[in-house]
Amino acid sequence: MRPDRRHPPAAGASRRTAGRSAYHAQPTSRAETYGRYLLMRAKVRLAYRGDFLLNAAGDLLVAAIGVVFLWAIFSHVPDIRGWQFSEVLFVWGMAETATGVFFVLFQGLWHVNQRYLLQGELDRVLLRPLDPYLQVLLDNINLEDLPVCLLGLGMMAFALPGLPALSAAQWLLLPVFLASSVATLGGVLTGVSAAGFRVHHRGTAVGLIYQGAVFNRYPLDIFPTALQRLLTYVVPFAFTAFYPATWYLGRPEWWPFVVAQPLVGALSLWLGVRLWKQGLGSYRSPGS
Amino acid sequence: MRAAWALVWASLRLGATLVLAYRLEVVVQIASASIVALLNWSLWAAIYQGRETVAGRTAEEMTTYVVVAWIVTTFYGNQLDRWLGARFRTGGIAVDLLRPWSLQAHLYLRDLGRAGCALLLTTLPLFVWTQALLPLRAPRDPRVWAAFGVSLLLAHAISFGFSWLVGVASFRLRNAAGLAHLKATIISMFSGALIPLDLYPAPLRAVILWLPFQGMSHVPANIFTEAVPVGLLWQPLAVQAAWGAVLAVLGVWAFRHATARIVIQGG
Image (tube, rainbow over all chains, first blue to last red; front, side, top):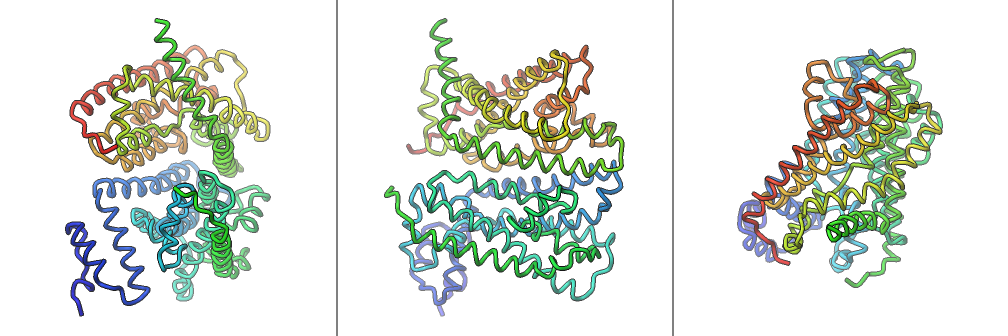
């Protein structure tokens, strides 16, 4: 066993050494190849270490605005349409956790239009014997948003004392609900970014999806009915925090949606990836 | 003198042209700001259910405040810090520095051109649809409208001041994306764009009102909701103007320091 393969040089090592060892040691499995992809990404980001930290701090601060916002509102009112502080905090925390993981994993889709399609970086991706979709994701893994997930989990933990005690099943299913929330967010974005294969555009419209996703932080029933339907049946962001959270808040009115939530996640991601792969079939290189 | 005016006009027009070049972005911006305005409005409408006042404001005042505070960001919001950072990274800044005029003044005017164009294409349409469809209130007094217009212009100057400072900081930091991010966060926390400043507890609020950020969204929204008596309208405007001037002077100073010893990256 070659030791340098199991223990790749630390990020601080000179680039040339790192590059050479990665090149010479053949990866043995697909998982290892993807692991190296991740490692390279971490190295690239840490090249500007100060900037990395500032970015992480910035993302954390953006997320922390939510805490300040909720605290400011609830220092003036005891509830929003019957929702107590700890309930809103739990929904918000769940949304923040799922959105954080979503940002870590799916950041690459933001650049699909501009970088991969208009500037033709997809050519490079297509030349490699790995799944292009996964390459685009792994190329852009965004570790800066990990602290945001922690903040989200912290918000949920902070809300717990104000909620009914959780059962073992609720603890066990929490990761499932969170994973499905991430899959829903990722699936929608994947599907939308797939449009870039047909409509050649800089892709700022993709950002609208994120803008719409912030609705998932609030109890759904504070919104007008039309908006509630939109967030359930058209762009299913209500499934990315609110519906699963209702089970933890001891509100039984929405149980069919809680049960459906894991399915919605799987379906969204499947559909999104399918659209993406279909779009990929019609990719024409810009030649630049 | 005529040449100077021609330069001013050319800078303004360049900014406007850049907006018009990406017309689809305008639509996206309207859609995006509409989503946020709708979200804020629904949230506040829900908060006011069964309540007369929150933080000393009526439902109508508060919903107007949050919607206006967000809409005005489409006027003053700019990406100049990122643009300057990119110019530095690509080495294009060398060309910008060679030009025989003040880069700061040129970019200010250019962004004013962008803002003017955004006012007609984005900000005003947003005002029109929110006023038409949501139960908001608009001021009747023309003096309030005039003060609101001036406060928008000054909010833009403050916003430009910060973007310029962060952009210039990238000359030293090499990569200021993180700093730009931090700036955006602080602005959304203390400008009133996301969190109405009246919600903060009194001591914290007093501090925030001394900071320049409140001149960006809070002052225009406060004026628009007629929270400032007509006779005292000059006060927030004077504070805004003072901050705009302070930031501009700081910008001149920072630029001089940053370019005294600048590393130009390969072209």
